[in-house]
Structure formats: structure tokens, C-alpha cells
Image (tube, rainbow, N blue to C red; front, side, top):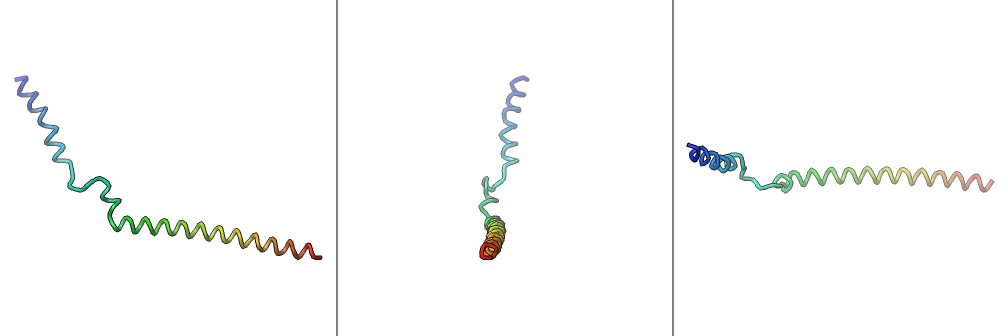
Length: 74
């Protein structure tokens, strides 16, 4: 009886692993075109916002320097 129980338990994990595996490969979601497009769009938006913040900072610096030059002339 013990040998039957051991055989049944030994064979069960193999059938369960087949039952729960999918046909898709690991990382297939990351390789899909839609995911790449969305990721690219998010990255582009992030870079755009960073550049806009940097330009705003530079413009403020230019205005400050202009005022500083006007005050230095007088």
C-alpha cells in the first residue's frame, strides 16, 4: 500500500506542472508591440517634461541675468 501511495504522489507534481504552465514564454508580454509602444510613449513624455523644466529654469536664469546687467549699468 505504501508503494502505491508513493507512486501516486510522485506522479502528481508532473501532471500538475503541465496543467498550470502556459504556452507563452516568460517575458512575452514585455516583447509584445503594444507594450513597447506604450513604454516608448511614457519615456518620451518623461523626457519632454524634464526638458521643459530645464528650459524654464534656463529662461528664468536669463531673465535674472538681464535684470542684473541693467542694474549694473546704472
